[in-house]
Image (cartoon, rainbow, N blue to C red; front, side):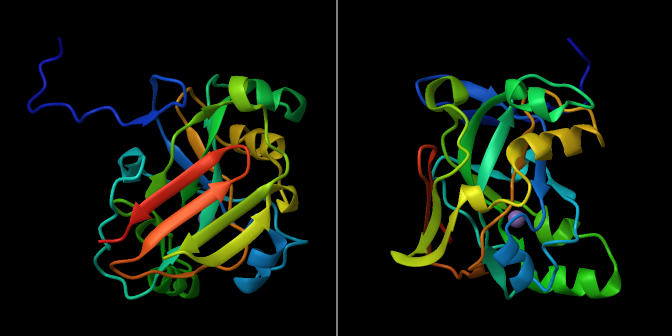
Length: 228
Ligand code: MN
C-alpha cells in the first residue's frame, strides 16, 4: 500500500449495459468530423486531417446525472457525439485491426464553452479551458460491441426540452472509427479504458440552466442530463 499523503481520487467508471462498469483512463475528442458542422464552424471539411483534443476523465458526467452550468462562460454549447471505448490498447494500430481494439460504444455530449473557444482560436491559444472543464462530458451507458456490433450508420440526434436541435447520421462522419483509432494511436499509445468522442453533426447551439438534454444514437443508446 502506497504511503499517499491524502486519499487517492476515486476511479471514474462508466456503467455497462448488461452489467459491470468500465474503468476510464483518458478522454480524447475528435474535432470537426461531420462536413456540415465543419462548415458551420468556418472550416473546410475537405482539407483538414483529423485532429484531437482531450478532457480529464473526471469531466465525465455519468449515466443521467445533472450537469452544473460552468463558470466563466455565457455561451455553453451542446455537441452530440458517438463515443468509442477502447478495450485493448496499442500504438500504430492499422485501420483493418482497429475495431478489434474497441470494447463498446456510448452516446455522449462534448459540452463546449464556445465563447472561450472563439477567443482561444483567435489568439492561437489551447482549447483546454473551452473543452476540458468540470462536468464537460455527459455520457450514457456503455453498450459492448459484443452485443451491438460496430455501428457504421444510423441516426444521431439531440433534443433540448423535447425540441429537436441536432440530427445527423453516423454514415456522414468524415473520419470513420477505424480511421480515428489508426490516427490517434499514431500519436499516443491507446490503453484500455480510453474513450474517444468522435465529433458532432451540425446544429450545435447554446444551452442554459434548466434545460433538459436528451441525445439518441440508433443501435447504441442515449445520453441525458439536466443543466442546473
Ligand atoms: Mn465535439
